[in-house]
Length: 134
Image 1 (spheres, rainbow, N blue to C red):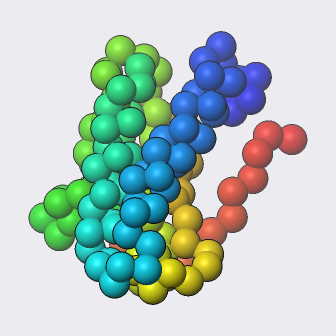
Image 2 (image 1 turned 90 degrees about the horizontal axis):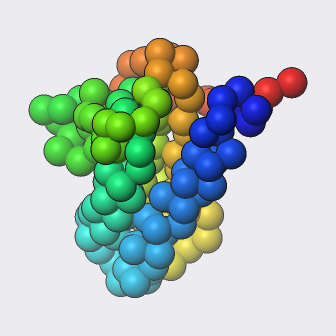
């Protein structure tokens, strides 16, 4: 999104901060054996951070469908509603078991595109690649 809109550079920094806050929130659960608590802390932090952004955000790839995932579900609206329409794909804590067992390679994932710019994929495992402009 760099250079595609006046908000792009600020939004990129905001997105990085959202993932940082989710990672920091789940940090206290490293090695404590509680996958659900680690995930919930990351979800809560990510939701709070997203809701503080001046975006009209919609989660298009999230933790699952609304009735199956009460946290950051597909179709959930986030942000203040005052800014640009943004599609969001996320996983607040990819690697909950890794976190609970103090293993490497857990991460917090967030991707944004202009509204309508992201595929609403079915809730299934798949290989993904993200490519920037150019």
